[in-house]
Length: 90
Length: 158
Picture 1 (spheres, helix red, strand yellow):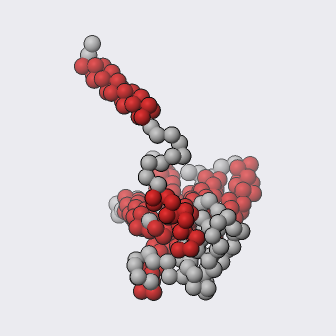
Picture 2 (tube, chains in turn purple, orange):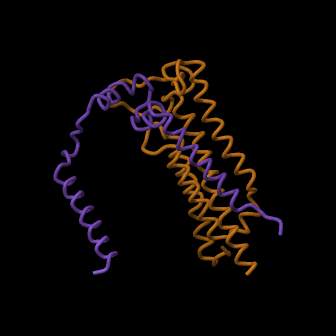
């Protein structure tokens, strides 16, 4: 066999073994290991942020810096596209 | 991209206002229903891309100024950061929710538990949704518009 075939089979086997392990060892759906933060947010989000939507309160309030980074990524994407496709004098 | 047939144009004419309305609804109700600024902005931007596909990039490029879209994108980013910095001034921390529970704009606190949706809640979350919505609409649309226009000009030159 060629070297590349052996490497591909080896990589595929490793990935499959890890997937099988994660399938066996995964904890059941809806029962997270660490529940302190979930319980805190579910209990306090209506009093602290005054909104009924817990997901939005996490995205824009508790994890605001994450959204700021996301907005920065969009801004840099726009800047990069406008720079690459600018009009060049011929 | 050149313009397409009359069938596609008519379908785009019918569908464009609905996608615009639905996207703006998702942005405005981001603190009550699933979705928010990013998702609603992506819906509105894809509605604009529908027009771009139907009418051709040159048609849209002559009517919508690229620099205006870039200005809107910057307005959204500046608004987002300004609201976050106001939290630093009126509250204690960056991104502090200073409007929640203040009984002014978006200041009503809902009762704990499963309650009826009230639009006038959420503190700074609706303001941030609007800012991010403007930013995502202009940002995504200007990316697609500039790339489509550049590729169409390249086709013309060949």
